[in-house]
Length: 412
Image (cartoon, rainbow, N blue to C red; front, side):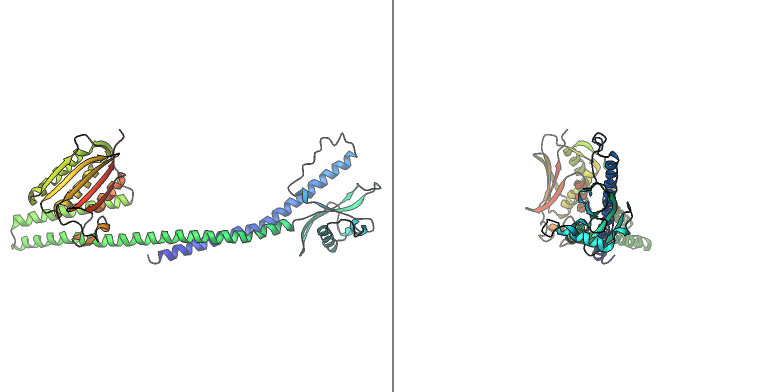
C-alpha cells in the first residue's frame, strides 16, 4: 500500500479537527444554554424564598427552618424596583449617588425591551442584546418603606459568563494546534514504521523465494539427470537429499519467524544447565564438522550454568551459530561458556577472515546479502529466539568472527 504516511496523517487530521469542532460547538452552544437554565433555577429559587418570607409575615420563629442556600448563580441576581408610574428607583436618585454603571446599562437594556406592563408576574423571560444576555422575572415586592406592594424585576445577566467561556476558544485553539502537532508526529512515525515493515516483508518474500529457488533448481537438475541417465544415481540422490534437507530447514526457519512475528510461537520453559544444551548442539553439528575436517574446541566452566529456557529453541540458536562458524572458519572454531554477574555468556569464535565491516550492522537481518553472499535466515531467527528468552546476540571481529550470546541466569 503506497503513501501510508499520508493516509494516516489525513485520518489523524480529520479526526482531530472533527473532535475539536464538536468540542468547541458544545462549548459555544450548550454552555450558554446551561447558564440560562442555571439562571432560571436561581430566579425560581429566589421567588420561592421570597414567597416563604411573605407567608411568614415577619415571624422569626417560622423562618428559623428556612435557611437561604441559593444556587450556582444566586449571587448574580440584580433587582430593579419600579414605582407605580413606571419609573425605576435609579431614575429618582441623584447622579452623585453610587449606582453601578453596569447595572444602569442592564436596566436601560431591560426597559428598552420591556415596559413594566408587558411583564406578567412570575413569568420568566430571556432575551439577548449587544450588551447582555438577560434572564428576568417580574414579581411584587412587599419590602417597601410604606409597606405597599411594588413591582420589581429580578434579573441575571449571564453574558459575562458566556463571554468568558467563549474567550477560552483561543486556549482551545492553542491546545488544538499542540495536539495536532503531537498527533502528526506520532502518525508520521507510525506510517513510516508500517512502510518499513511492509518493505521488510516484501524483501523477505522476495529473498526467500530466491533462496528456495536455488535448492529447487539443484533438485530438479539432478532429477532430470537421473531420468536421462547422464549422472551417477547414488551421488545425485545424495545431493537431492542434501538440498531437500536444506530447503526443509529454510522453510522451518521462515515458519518460525512468521510465528514469532505473529506472537504464535509457543515456548516450553524449563530450568536447564546451559552446558548440556551446548553439548547437544555440538553433537548435532558433528557430522558436518567431521566432513569438513574442522576442529571445535569447547571451553566451559566447571560449575553448572542454570538458565530458564526452551531447550529445543535455544539449541536451534547454538546450532545456527556453530554452523555459521563452520562455514566461514579456516580450520578451528572455539566455543566458550562463562558467567558474568547475572548473565551466562557464550562466545563462538572462528579463525576465518571475519565479517566485513559494512556487513556487521546487518548480519542479523533476514536474507541479508553481503560481501560473502546471503546470510539466510538462521542468524535472524537466532536473534528473535534469544529476544524471547530476554537474551541478546552480537557479532564482532577479533582473529576471525565472534558471536557473543548473553542469557539471564536462573534465580532458582
